[in-house]
Structure formats: structure tokens, C-alpha cells
Image (tube, rainbow over all chains, first blue to last red; front, side):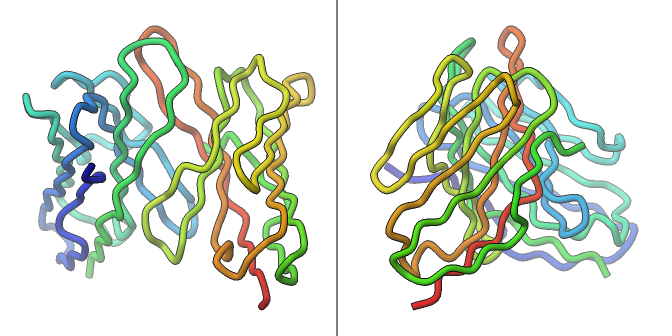
Length: 115
Length: 113
């Protein structure tokens, strides 16, 4: 079956602009999470969505937002971009519905460069 | 904030040798997972161990968990050049249906042919 698909793979934006990243989870997976990876801070949790509802949110400013559609596809948006937002943004999906231990399947990521 | 701390930060071994990577964490967990990342691409899930388990095997991988010491180790036996990658431990803690992975900073493994 198809893996987690993230688009676009690379993106260059100017400070102050906004950007939208897309993630299509594995078919049947209803939980989608987003992570930011930078050399300095490592992998940090942004938010998690399940059935179009945000269930969990990390410690990021309000410029970072996301949503999930009825088909489980998710988008994240970053407004008023700053140089420090340059990072690899990773999306992950899992089959978890409630309690229970499940691994996550990650996409290849979107490399965002802010200039 | 980082939950897991991997040790060592970098490891270089010869093909065929075993690689042992350690991870320590700070708070309660439901399970601990190990992931591999090649050259800044996506993470690949390797193995998951629940908090009530002590050891688990998957192919050439062996993971242990000591919840009293809040630590885990990942052993890769008979390493191959293709194992060269960054390895991350991630703790999973959920309340109700909310969950998130908290990652360590990673270990860079180089396997020399």
C-alpha cells in the first residue's frame, strides 16, 4: 500500500510569506501528526489530528496551524515566516484510535527554506 | 523539549560488528520506539517496546527497556554498510486518545565497509 505522501518536497519562501504543506496518510489511518526537525532543536512535535479534530499541540507559536479533512489528509500552515522556520517538516500517520501501542509511518518530509 | 537522550552521539564501526545504542528518558511512558533516518529523509519505524516488556527482537535488532532506570538500548547485530544512518529513540505517552512521540537528538551510526 502507498506510504505517507508529503508535498511539496522542497520549498523556498521569503520572510513574511506564508506556506501550506500537505500530507496524505496511509489509507485507513485517521491519526496524522506533524513534526519539525532542525539541527539545533532536533525533532519537535507540532500537532496531532484525528477525525478532523486537533487532539494535541506542541509548544509552537500561533503562526503554526493545521487542519485535517474528512479523507484524513492534513495540511499545516505557517504564516509570517521567519528565518528560524527553515526546517524539515515531517508528517506521520498511525492506525491508533484510542489506547494502544502503534508505530508511526513517516513521510519523506518537506524541506522548507526561508530566505 | 527533548525527552530521550541517546548515547553515544556518534558511533563508527566496521561492517560485521555489533552496534549498541542507548537511550535515557525522564518521564513515564507507555512505550518506546526506535526510528532510523537516512540523510535527512523521513523516519523509518524499526521497533516498538511496551512499558511492560523488557526485551524484544526483530531480525537483527534487539531492544531492551528498563523502566526503573528509564533507559533503553538498541542492538544491531552483524552490521552492514546499509545500516549507516541516524537512529532516534522516541517515547510515546498517551492519555485518553491524545498521544505524541518525544524524540531524542539521535545517534549517527557509520558502518565502514
